[in-house]
Every structure is written in structure tokens, then in C-alpha cells.
Length: 314
Image (cartoon, rainbow, N blue to C red):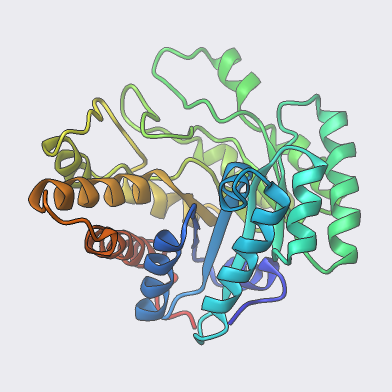
């Protein structure tokens, strides 16, 4: 079922101390795999689309693409009994945010984290005003997602990661529904040079001061088996490192409720696609290549739902 607001899913997760996966899509194939996993695991799920995904779905027209994606997700959701939300991931400007709202997304992210704090508050507050009028929830971000390495000084780290006191003020001034605090992750397949490190004490303070659902961006685990499979069929993914499962579980203990995952789905999909193309050189039916790739996405998502604690929460 298509929920009215993503907040409905995350408020329950916040109250019951578990995490909900937010999985990015660019096409029907990814959506099919994610939805299949949610049904099998009886788990709520958040589907995410970036500004780029909106443009891709609309053949260059992000407004048209937003409607295409919303219609596709809603049609899948209306035929199953698990809660499904559709979220705009990293909306950087009001045009994309408004397009998502008008298309029927159940939440939007306004990412003004690169702006000075005061400007971030002003931009986020305006988006909250517009979205809440349509009963749509809003996510925002504080700090910068650049990873925490062994050689980063305390001063550099404090300048990059979220300030818990600022987080409290930000939430109070903006009325945002959930917040992505920078605590040490980064986007992509190359998150850490050394061991994965997140600032859990900082996260604990943010949760204590804000009380709202918190979001972990850059949360893909970059599974070694999928990387090896992709590389064995011609990919060149070297030195990739993600967030281990035990760290994801720890983050949930300290207050994370929405866990964003994109890279893991891409690697699993591409690994299986490369394998199929290699093994069936004379096959020209795209479905024969996409079906195993969809299955790979389903398996990654199902495993993640178990790890995050959202399985059997419906």
C-alpha cells in the first residue's frame, strides 16, 4: 500500500527502535526487486529517486520523470499489503522538490547542507511550509558527508560533522520531520581508506536533543562477494569499502531509523548483468539478462531488511 506520508513509516520505526531501508531506483527493474523483497520479508520500504533519476525517467524532463516514477511506484504499492513510501533523495533546488510534491511523492529531501547554517534553516523552513501544506514529510541534512579517516584532525572533523546543538536548533526552527546528520559516512563505493568509523557519541547526542527519526546517508556495505563477481566479469571496482553490517546495527541502536542504500544495489545488479551477458553471447532478449539482475537486487534488499530489523514489522 502506498502511504500518505513517509513519516508514518519512520515514526513507527523511531518508536520501536528499528531501521527502515531507503533504496534508490532508476528503472522498473530495481523497483521490482525491492518490492519483491519487501513482500517476502513483510517489511515497510522506502523507495528513493534522485534528481538524476527523475530526469532519466522523463527522458531529460525531470517534471515528467517525477510523475512517471510516482505512478510506477504507486501501481506496485497498491497491489501489495506492505507500506511503501516514495522519497526525493537529495533535492538541491525548489524546482525538483515542487515537481516531486506535485507528482505525489510521500516525502522530499531538501539538501541545503552546503549552505551556511542560517541559509540552510531558511531554505528548509520554506520547503517544510510547502510540503506540510500537502501533508508530505521533509528530510534535511546537517554537516558534510566526506568520511572520517585516520589522519583527519579533531578540528577538521568537528568542522565537517554535525554539531548536536545546532541540530536541536535546526529541528526546532524548521519543523523538519527527519534529519540526516553527518557522522562519518560518504556516498559511493569508496567510503573509507581504513576501518569504517562513525561518531556514535555525536549521533547519540543528536538523537537525545532532537528526538526525531534520523537518517544515515552513504550506508551501503559494498559486499565483497558482489564486487568480486562484477570484477570477474570485466568490472574494475578496486579498493571499494562500505559500512559493515555490525556498524549499521550499532547506528540503529543510537537512533538511526532510515538507512539509505544505492551502491550495493548497483553493484549486485551490474555483477549479475555482466555474468549473464558473458554466459549468453548470442541471446538478444533483454529480459533474459534483467531477470537474474532483478533477483540479485531482491536478495540484497531482503538481507538488508533482516539486518536493519524491519522484517516482519508489517
